[in-house]
Image (tube, rainbow, N blue to C red):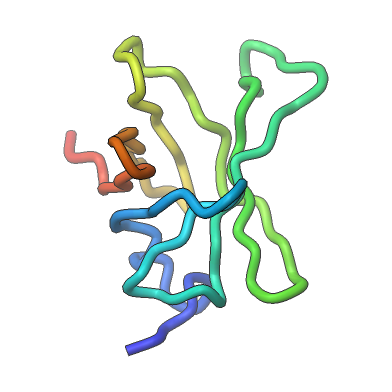
Length: 99
């Protein structure tokens, strides 16, 4: 099943492998990749790192990567849903945050 992320946002969750400067979810395929970008002028409300979704030639903003106080763990917010993004040996895992 190759559903693109912008059609079904729940597919933001999953394991992403680093491929060059992008993160690829093998369940989604190479059509939709995440890119970690860097702000030139971060602020307290806009941290240094943020994520873009690239689908073909189209890019769209997903979320800032907010520090959680734990090394390698970031909080994301996308369409009103909170996520945790955790680094691992090959990339990142994104899961919905449960309060």
